[in-house]
Length: 294
Image (cartoon, rainbow, N blue to C red; front, side, top):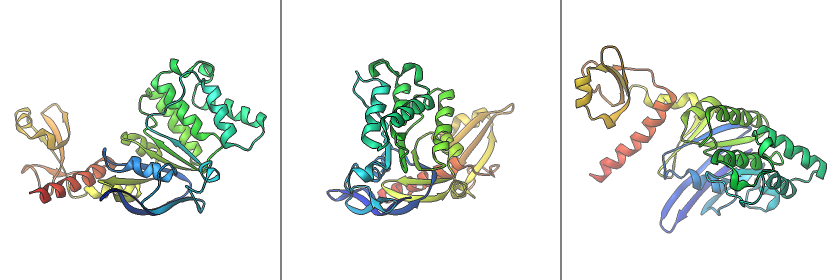
């Protein structure tokens, strides 16, 4: 169990993350929000890598900042995973296993080989990291986070730079791990969340805007999602930055947008998706900020 209680981070007079509380039990959770929303701050606080200004984060009731024993229960993969360029994948995983695991050397070796296989690095395991592609480095970062079967795994943009086959492989690995651990998955690829997560946390401007079932996210766009078919001439005359989607059809362009009232006389309400609900949360906040500015 991963718990945040009144957890927040403040720099001088400005909140990077306003105090928030939640509890995550075994399973996979999505963490969504635009750039600057506070996602990285939250992940670093939960991983025990940053001291909070208020509140506390705990794993199984133990503070994440209480020492090595608590941190060994957490696996963390930052968006940019760095390692010594001369090290090989096998050497890194062996070193991580010795730091995090109280298992015997033979058990550690078995775990290293299992993880190399899980992230498809067996045939590259003895090459120095400087020869690895960005996707290979990302997979190695995931593997090191899984060493020792931690209770909590926090992953920032895990599938960026991976080809479709590797993305599926990695999603399946994380889904299997979520059967026994808490996984917090931060990503801008909404398809990864929709495929793998049942619950989601949404941050904007350092505030917790939503924490609940993925299915409930779509409700934030109910009654505000409009769809209509425009001629190509009409479409070209529109303020296209306000459209969520525009797809060519045999007769024109099928348009979708979020608005409180019909954008055209022939627009009809449409059934929102999870992505529509997420965008509704973000644009709602942006609209309020714009009103305050005026």
